[in-house]
Amino acid sequence: MQTKASIVIPAYNEGRVIERCLRSIFSSAEPGEFEVIVACNGCTDQTASIVRSLFPLVRVLESEVASKVVALNSADKEAQHFPRIYLDADLSVTAQSLRCLIEPLVRGEALVSCGRMDIDDTHSNIPVRAFYKVWKQNAYFDGGKFGGLFAVSRDGHSRISPFPKVTNDDEMVRRKFSPSDRAYVDHCSFTMVAPRTLEGLINIRTRAIRGSVELDQMGYMNSDGSFCCRVGKLLRRVMSRPSTWAALPIYILISAYIRLIIAPDRSCGDGVWERDDSSREAI
Image (tube, rainbow, N blue to C red; front, side):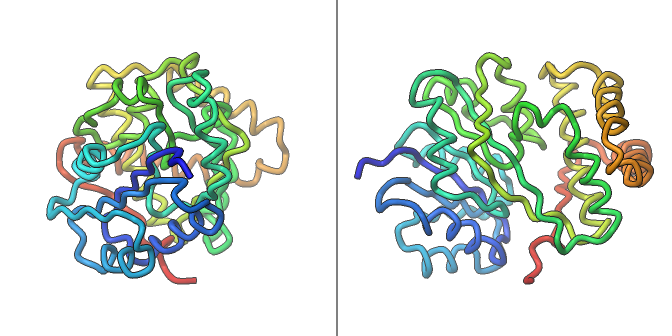
């Protein structure tokens, strides 16, 4: 069949999760439906060999440079098709969801599209589960979740390529498009396995906050309003949902600790890439 889209998957030491990611796609994909490229960058584990042995139709690129941006740009040079889908290696998404994701792009209704993120916190500890119970109420998610999965049309791709050197590339892409350019595809759902530990949660939230501050400093405008405005919306939503009240103090403590103590200590240009490995542990 005709290839519908190219899928770019950057991977840094993702040997423990890359099979899960790819099987979630290929278990329901038609032969030749997607061109899939796994861009290994700076890997010191078996990510590349696992992909080659289990998924021979997947194209594997390898670079000694541990950089997600380098991986994205190198895969972009090799990819042949549009729409183009960008997927993090630690996420799971079905082929049907990917078909839904690219539909508004194929129809010319949008330049970029994103889906709905489901959070699997089955193996997370109590503070992590409490944090996500409140976090999911953010108005940000009303327009879908760019973090980890999005797709662009050919015209949309010209707006973001080549990827600049930024910490939060997903948020950079979101800010490059006005709300009228974006499509939220509710029928496209993907799953993120939440950190098991508080340390893992702090790592990934610190990186996200550092990346957003970096984008602010680089002049990428955020259309979601001021920080105070976003917090106000979140609190109003939580107050209207009694089931989230008990989790709110934990959310506030964790968020304040990260924003006031951890994130300011780490400059955006120091080369640090905070990562959670607890969600990549075998279940």
